[in-house]
Amino acid sequence: MGSVVVVGSQWGDEGKGKIVDWLSERAEVIVRYQGGHNAGHTLVIDGVKYKLSLLPSGVVRPGKTSIIGNGVVLDPQALLSEIEKMRGQGVEVSPDTLKVAENVPLILSVHRDLDGLREKAAGASAIGTTGRGIGPAYEDKVGRRAVRLADLNDTDTIESRIDRLLAHHNALRTGLGADPVSAETIRAELEAARPVLAYTAPTWRLLREARGAGKNILFEGAQGAMLDIDHGTYPFVTSSNTVAGSAAAGSGVGPSSLDMTLGITKAYTTRVGNGPFPTEQTNEIGQLLGERGAEFGTVTGRKRRCGWFDAVMVRQAVETGGIDRLALTKLDVLDGLDELKICVAYEVDGERMDRLPVETARQSRVQPIYETIKGWSGSTYGARSWGELPAEAVKYVRHVEELVGAPVAMLSTSPERDDTILVEDPFHI
Ligand code: GDP
Ligand code: IMO
Ligand code: MG
Image 1 (cartoon, rainbow, N blue to C red):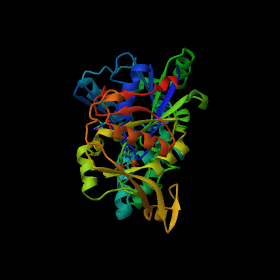
Image 2 (image 1 turned 90 degrees about the horizontal axis):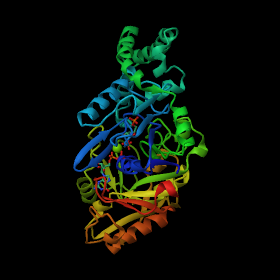
Image 3 (image 1 turned 90 degrees about the vertical axis):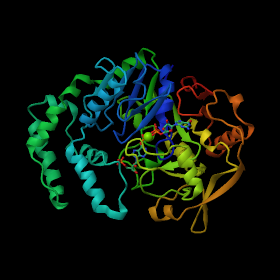
């Protein structure tokens, strides 16, 4: 019994939602601890698709407790609409099954506006954010001027909090050529957020009790290691720590409560938004991976950039994020390719490197050094046992393990929940 932290090891969209949904059969509590509704996690269960942004991916299984931890930035309207959407799909979400941290900072219209204004002002150097107000909301949290969920109950301080927030935002808005926002507008937004209060709880205590009672806990990361605010391709990153250590601070448990980290890893690489991408294929291979893998963003519908598997990057994610095991996804997308490439090292300004340089300009000059390996002609699509995999596909998986320095515990072979091969149970490692 224990806890498993699920993180992305690339630039997000590795298939975290599918793996969390599958694993949540074995867990009683599923926790989101960073990011917000910039995340888009897709589950497919008996042909029915569920798209989640804020709700943990265990929510579709009855009888589980879903927690949104303090490390998330919460757009109350986005949460309320997602709850309605899930109910429309027959999923039960109630204050008994969903618990939201009292101290979670809120995303308000000023955050969405600022995200958009800044991206527009940046022109060609825009980050390509999801436009959800994630970055500005984290800035306000760290700047100690956020309005947090429980503040809605605090009539003594709410007005001064609104004033403090608007003093900051209206100065920025004026500088960026936008109209100031009135306290009345923010008050109305906070009023509309009241229904979320029904879900609040001291989630840190619930987690402690769950662990004390020997329950399995699953921590569901959003984004991926290369979008981490410290370890990613800064400044083309998101505004939170996406590495596993974030699960402790972002939910209110100690680091010793995190037993193992599962790094969800796509069998090739994708990225949505701007920034360096050494193995990107802006050719027919990239096109093919995108079409076969249906690589369109869940949140913004943007086309994802596609390329070969980058073992240097994933090894770095394993090392910086403490990834113990991999869950390899979308192997089926590589079916039928004559040969496959894997990036095994970088060349930067004539120097061979086994890690990503830190400087943005050097990152964009990285030349991948590839190893070419034989593909497989058979199909891995929908395989549910190791024995169904073509020998060359097994070789590919083994080679990935060796190059990135972490063994594969799970393999996913289609979007469907049960098209999954369990090699080693993450709760028993
Ligand atoms: P997340 O953000 O990490 O949860 O990933 P997304 O849900 O944004 O994107 C992953 C996409 O790949 C979704 O459309 C999934 O349904 C799909 N998917 C997940 N695993 C597999 C797989 O093994 N094979 C294929 N073909 N699709 C998969
Ligand atoms: P999941 O959880 C892929 C990217 C955006 C942009 C950068 C910053 O589904 O894997 P932000 O709105 O966070 O300030 O945008 O991060 N990004 C993601 N890319 N998957 C995600 O989440 C992402 N969340 C943010 O495209 O490049
Ligand atoms: Mg996604």
